[in-house]
Length: 263
Image (tube, rainbow, N blue to C red; front, side, top):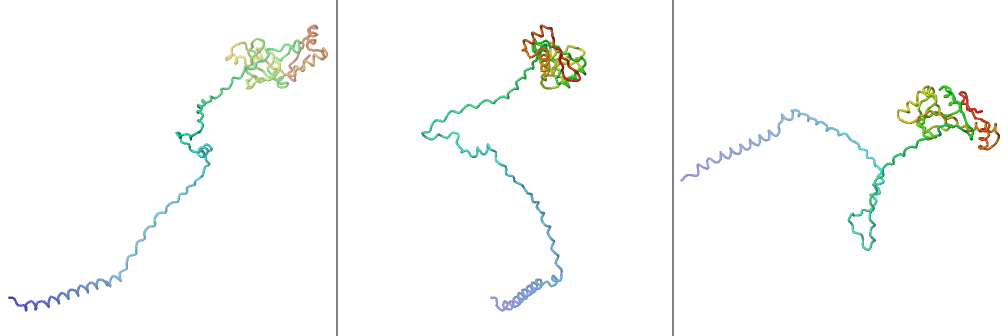
């Protein structure tokens, strides 16, 4: 048998050693926790964080628009289902009319041509002669002083269809012809002096074309005043009979410097 004296003699040194080791560990921990050198060292300043980027503020303007009339009517109308059944004891709905076909745009009606007399050869039953200047400049001067215009016409029977209206210098102008007493100008030299308006019209209008002058409508009043001064206040039939019996012929002059005069 082993004796217990060997064991008891070895136990005190181990206990002392364990206590010493624990005391050293505690002293080391306390020393490290104090860190006297750490208090002398300056701590590094914290690095400032960059400020976050500023967000740009976007403003949106909202404008309220008035509703369309058609949309307002549709919104106000009560919603009726398409296949809803009619209520009992209600009269039958009338059949829907077929949609009307779209209307076609009305075409402008063609403008009827202007027709005038071919030539005025009598006034109040009395034969008439009108002396017109043969010079284009004199004729233009008379038209400016008394009124009137020139036209190119197509003869058809006893009337004439106006094809174009001319100014006093022979240039074509738009619009209807002026009012006046028509006379046919058959002098080719006058047509040439006006720039040959007949030649321009023949390029697109066949037929017998003539150049006419529409003298001032006051010619009838001047002629009637002249006839009454000669035959007195008689009727037109009597005035024509007296003029034919005496061989009288009324002659009027288109004066370049003024209005018409008759004798």
